[in-house]
Image 1 (cartoon, helix red, strand yellow):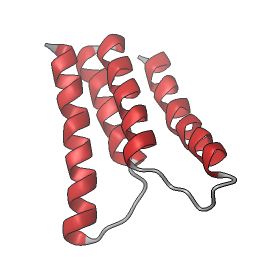
Image 2: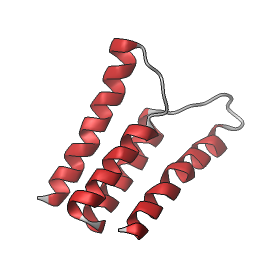
Image 3: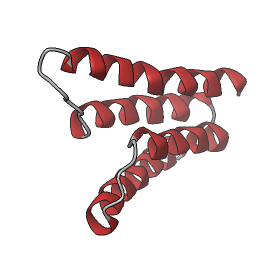
Length: 96
């Protein structure tokens, strides 16, 4: 049940990201809402569901919200954005 709630929280974060961008025209880093989903998953279900939420969120951020300023630096930017998301996520897991 905790894993389903973690997946649901990530889905809600995804829908909020897409909805805010399309409806309101608000643009902000998509990782912020996914990070909230990760923190809520760790708080609600523990480390296992939190790790599931982290992995799903990282994959969604990489493949749905790509930011590519130029083709030569795009892979490096993607890796850095993933590390910037994973670092606080791992910290939240370790604090749990």
